[in-house]
Structure formats: C-alpha cells, structure tokens
Image (cartoon, rainbow, N blue to C red):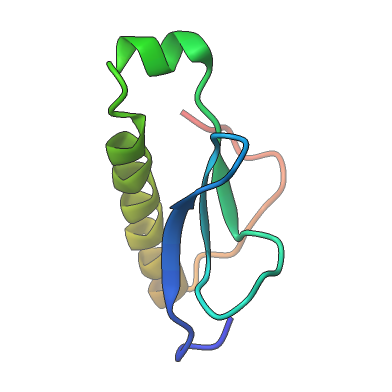
Length: 78
C-alpha cells in the first residue's frame, strides 16, 4: 500500500464495515461483520465499534512494522 493512499471506513451495501483505499474500487483491505445479535447488543452503534477496532488494528500494524516483528504462522491469538 502506498503511503500516500488515503483510507476510508465505509459501510458496505451488505451491512459489513470495511476499510478501503478511498481512490479505488478494489477489494477492501479489512472487512468487519457483526452478527444480528451483536448489532442488537450494541444498540445500532456497531459502526462506532468497527471504527475503534480498525483504529486499534492500524496502531498495532504500525508498531509491528516499526519493530520488524516477523509474521509466523501458527501463532496463538489471545
């Protein structure tokens, strides 16, 4: 991804929330899907939660890139 690309968070027609490059119609970089139960639990505020999830993920991705932590398959996710 080019460092000059602008990113946007959008709600797709199917109700999923996506992070994509603003100047492209290509496949989204990240897609978050909430179940109907989760959307009900969040009282319709799932977009705000998705934005926070994407923001946190981007911060961690930036840290990983700075630290040069190699990706290894089979890592345990907590």
